[in-house]
Length: 248
Image (tube, rainbow, N blue to C red; front, side, top):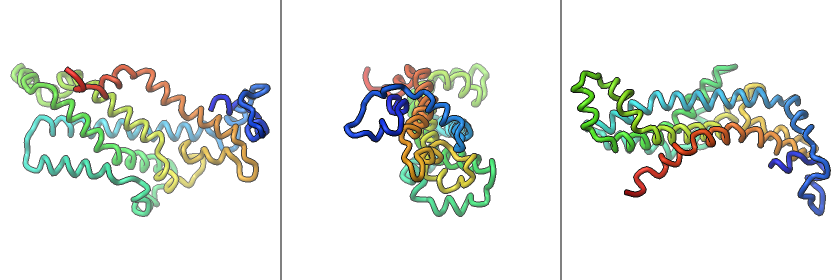
């Protein structure tokens, strides 16, 4: 993507193909950034939606996962199965229903709609992965904290959460990346171009009559930079969360 983003249009479509550009076209990034499509607005939209959905999932999934892991209540298995079933449904399958539900949400309210949709479709995985980590923490630790005078919420936040950080980080990355890459619901709901996330606005850089592939690759490279930065920051905790319980 980096090499292609530095080519001219003729170098991209040349036959035989030219792998390295004769003269790197760094101006492609300037042309894209100040184009009518406005990638800065699309990047802001993507960031708001991805962070909003991730925070909402954490706020809902953390207490839900903790309660399911710590308490045995009637219908617990049914509840977990229902949570898992929601993972089988994708925005594409529910396109008509999503449009009917949120078609009246205009302007910046459509970001709130996409935050709710992305949170809903990623909530089940977060609950499942986090409850497995909560369940791995001995109950005796919670009981000792309760005896020492901590309340249930204090026990969860001050005792249990620090012990399950790898699972929380795994859930954060999964939800964030899925929300960052979501396409179907955004395509259906966001009609205003300056509010569209990158996944929806990106094809417009290709052009209608002239195929400017170098611009498409430039925007694609810009789109993956935040995700790469996120992975580089939390790589160790992510690996720990994915491999937890793999060996003794």
